[in-house]
Length: 170
Image (tube, rainbow, N blue to C red; front, side, top):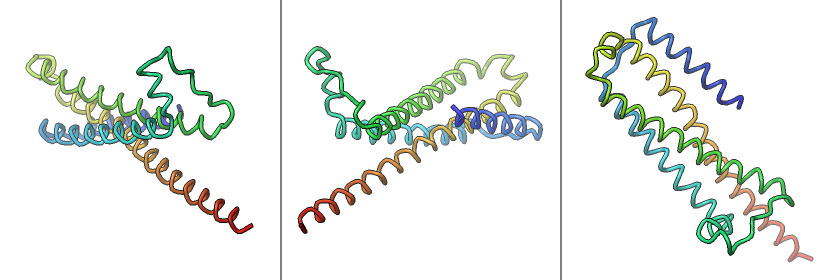
């Protein structure tokens, strides 16, 4: 929650600065940037979806046949619970980012020819820029979480390998 509040504050400052200084940009520049963020969002969906399927196969099986598989029990290890929370959190952030960008593109199509849009173009562009900053921070956080999850996975593999080697020495 703290992360979202910080992102909102930074976005509000970016919006105000863009409006105050009359910062302008073209729609094609925004579209290119938005498409890059959508691609990153898709990457996070893919990687984290694979993580869930790999680490928690019962969760995937439950989606396919909810009556055949019991709920996964994460009460024994807090580490598994936190890892799953992190993975699902990344997916939710990326879903929000992708949905918000699609909505921005749709609103642009629908509203760009209206008199209200044309009268307040600077305000609209400033708000959209602030929104882009907010979405960038959220998506960046999801990417950092993906990197961290992969790093922790490698660390876990090394720790298990070392423990097996230590057990074999006795």
